[in-house]
Amino acid sequence: MANCKPKEKKNAKNGTSFIREYKWWIIILVGILVVAYVLIYVCFHGSGFLPAGAELEKRDWLAFLGAYLSFAGTLIISLIAILQSRFYADRDRKRIKAERKKTVQPILSVNIASIDSQIAGTAEAFNPGKPDSIPRHKNVTIEIENAGQYPICNVIIFDKYLWQMLKPNEKKQIQVAYSDSPDAQRWKKHIIEVLETEYERTESGIPKWFNINYDDVDGNELFQTYELKDFDGTLYYSLEGTHEA
Image (cartoon, rainbow, N blue to C red; front, side, top):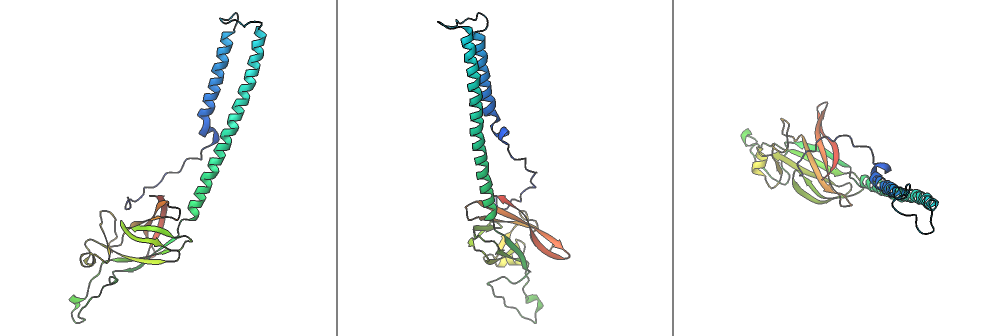
């Protein structure tokens, strides 16, 4: 969901090694070869229950077992070589894909442009001589700029589909107000209305966090989470992380 704040992630496990990836292949092959060897040995142990064969002696079968062991060793080495090539090729593909994914990710600049300002695209009349007629606002204006090299598409913020594309160096502004704000009651078509049950807020009515959902240029569905922070009285949104949608 677009409004789900991601939980803190645990440390990722170490990368998969070749042995861990294909251990069952190797175990099964070795097991088959051992079982086959034991069966042959049992069949011709001592007098055995199978004759050596016409014009054959036990030493002929001993020579066969030696050749069989050589074949088994060659087979295991060949299998390991094939699986190693496959393993490292897959790992290189995953590495290249991960590097590409990082390269095309946007660098979004999120700025609190204003607090409790007039709603954009509206006009309000008031009488300076009557203080009660002066409009009261309760909202926050957030400015978002794509400072990266690649555009992003299908941008969703606060569960609202906003823009089909945000190009590099392009700036957009949104105005957000909670349901109990006079702006939400009067200018529903001009603002993004949010609920405190979904987005916690400060006493001044600023969301403590929100997500920016988007598609990158390769079509990956992702979202970035921004958390509100305060440094020496200055409020700002800090990137918490980028996550799979």
